[in-house]
Image (cartoon, rainbow, N blue to C red):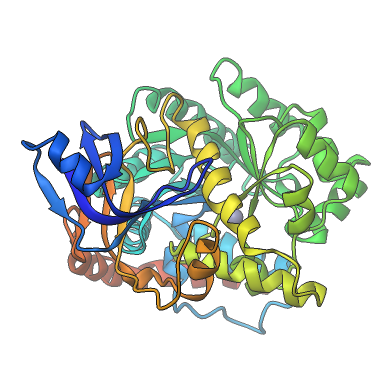
Length: 451
Ligand SMILES: [Zn+2]
């Protein structure tokens, strides 16, 4: 297949914008990128898809998300508003994840996947929790991802907060799914842990043991709130990153989400171990947890990537939030420059995706890369070049301009029509299920409020 008459944004190591560009796709892989004139002459028998002047770009990549949080939309939290992040966990996320049954897990994933296709996000790294439906939960999500046709990395977040049996079930679910996902083309897996705060040393050791021989890293929340650091210091006499390092959790396949309250020594350990640090500015603002040291992460050579923590799968909204947050938090308009954010969201996120899909080139439009791409109907009224593209994205691009989404050479949305998922039917099914989920949530949160 040839996609012609596009403005090709290549991203990759040497970002370029090719006007009047075209690319050729064979068996889900991009085999050639060039001008429309050249490629049409070279491959006269190929099926042609005319991009009609739209931008053709690699699909977005989300380094950290939670499909399971979908039913929180519009849901009231009973009692006084939570005053800090630990209260948000106790009154929102922990009672909500307990309210999820198998159907709710499946639908939470499906509604997020619809959202991802519409917003042009083609690879998602999910972190799942459903303590009353642990066994097989990752299969339910994987089936939804299969139906959608997207690319995803899945894990189950192990925690001690629901007792040793559920911690063990979480460990087994990760180990089982890591094996099951080994030969799948668009689905990969990692080993999930909730946070240092809720995983004791015995469970941590069991996770490390269970992960042995599975060629995996871990995916865990780190220092999202200072409570994580205080707890770690009090309980173990170590800061969070130090403790995880000593336990064998860090490394080039591990993602640590947030790292807002880490100190310079901890950042040094993350850099040394080539651990991936994911940044989620919208979530951080929403929870009032502070601003991560993004400029230090970017300039200090830490593997920093961009996620959304369960916010909409609109990654350009996350770019924009990152661009704004650090300027106001530091009272300095030089912070979080557009090119740094682009590097994090494109090159770094792509390298992270490649960790989970070894041997595949992801996140760039070049010969040999997977055909995960989007068409964007954007009409710049000033010059747009590879050099100023990050600022066009931050100030001009909207995800509503995404008209088509492709993963591995297959169209998932074409001219704004979803081809793999029926949004209306999925939303109707989720709406029908939501009252029961909310009821179970209220029962759970009432227990917490009564304590
Ligand atoms: Zn998270």
